[in-house]
Amino acid sequence: MIRRQLGREPRGLVRVAFRCPFGAPAVLEQESYLADGEPFPTTYHLSCPHAVRRISALEDGGAVSRYEQLVDTDPQLAASYRDGARRQRALRRPAAVMRDGGASLALGIGGTSREGAVKCLHAHLAFGLAQPGYTLGDRVAAEAAPLFPDEECCCA
Image (cartoon, rainbow, N blue to C red; front, side):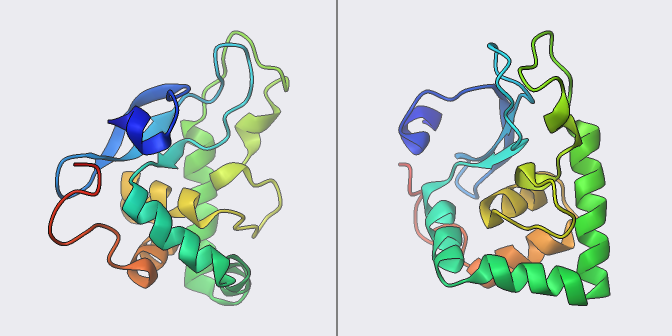
């Protein structure tokens, strides 16, 4: 099912971190580095096609810039963003081979290096689903609702 969701073989898959209401994989946890040492900076990857489309529509409408502005002006969202980045770095693990010398271990959610950069709402939503209590992810989820179809799984 994961192969079908992604349209390719999964790379660096650790486990399914969150399932949709129908029991299908929705968020995948990834290794910090692939076997060849290539960094994989997205710890949690959104795999549910319905949720991916909902978030893509937000991004297409300029929501990444809007969320960056919110992180810059909303103290609660800024605190959640900083805490999420800290938690993200704590989840990252070194590997025997790291092409970047371990540099990606210090990146935030979605591989961001600049403080306040949102970059990818898919990654923030995936982080929020896998790590409950992440306010920025919760806000993205609320804005994109419904994340999952009402009647049946989109992967059935």
